[in-house]
Length: 603
Ligand code: C2O
Ligand code: CU
Image 1: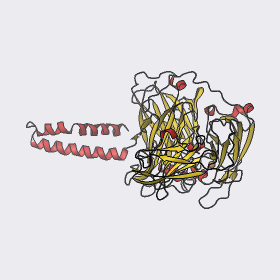
Image 2: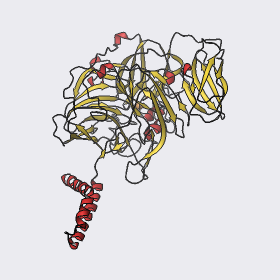
Image 3: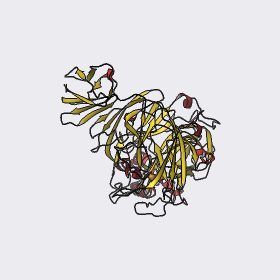
Image 4: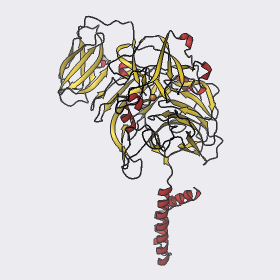
């Protein structure tokens, strides 16, 4: 290591001082014989250095995802490629990038608009994981974005400060689209979190870490089908990642975006670190641990103190997955096959951390308390539901798990929840393997494991949207289904292992409010102005009491080009992205859900 470092530095020195060496060599004082000798030696050392550098190259600088902030976000989902291994580049998928996507900074209380353009050759969706929003904006399997279409959901940010994420969710395609690398972080800010003395300099002392792993074929392409686990770690899409972090308290926002693998995280010197937040935001107070288990879809925010580390020293964040039992995702002993991986049941590096100088205004103390969460309790719940994890009937390419012996059916609503009800859900796993359970729409409070409130881990004591359901356990949560009712568009609940979810381990619920459906089934009537139009088309409803639930613009071939859930009518429809021609606007009525169509011409 020392030798490698010294040689690396020498190589850099030679590269940086090439000019001076050349000038010196061309100097008359230097005899020709020496010149040749020195030249030869210089190049020899350079070549050897480069060779050793290549052979010993252990780490790559951690990529920090770009950021987007404000209230308007342009996201382009695309196929791309990335150099992940020596040799061929790997075909990947990404948002505005070459793997993964930008971190979106949003503020509680703001209305945010997403302009999601699907530039893939496939339909997909983008789900805002953990976000409390109307079902029609949720980006689950029902909000399909065809290729070439711009999908424009928007909502008021009601979540508290938290680390959320966005990812594809098209039924039976989730594994494939997530495996490509499509996704991104969402960081919600609010006044309570901002008032705390916590590290908050993105990429400096506040680091997002998305953990995943991939298998490669002989051409360096991702192996996706029938693959539960990768062989090689990717941290923010960086293989063998290293990062320089300042000598002070550093905040890591860690997301498990794997297909199936869980991580038992800790530091190489077993130091204590502090959990300050879970899926849905900050805990009441930091929780000191030396290990934390992170399942697929879960997030954890931790503080680690590097203040006592020597400048230039290094420490590893590792997955202590060696010795995990069968049933722990990634605990399997096999290294090959559908559930095999070189990382299975081993302890492996997630991130090499080099300790660098402290920043100005460094956070050097651990806050003793964080925020005041008021959690729901079992006593608050007026409705109780039980869900059993059961064996399915595996078809080709399917997996043998589902809920209550029923596999997902996109046209069947499994549960109906009354708006504003507080419910307790208990998920029981008498299956052969551990699973996760995720619910859309709301954050919940885990209230019991095996009926025992004190068995809930302190590491999962905050607001959650994913929970681990190990073999032979039952886990209960309580949630309030407030704000958003929609009798047509459901929310999902599912195991977050993409292969299980695609295989049918998913169900859906609608939240219904008191607004009754109009039985007359009269469709909405409207006109468009100006028509022809240049940049904006406005919709004039014949009956001002009517409301638009959904608006789709299609081209002359019937292909959707713009999709606007619950459009803000007063703003009109921005048609600047359309080329000249004839288009149709299809308007779905809020009450009757019937669709009416009008034609317009784009100039
Ligand atoms: Cu992160 Cu239904 O998903
Ligand atoms: Cu599962």
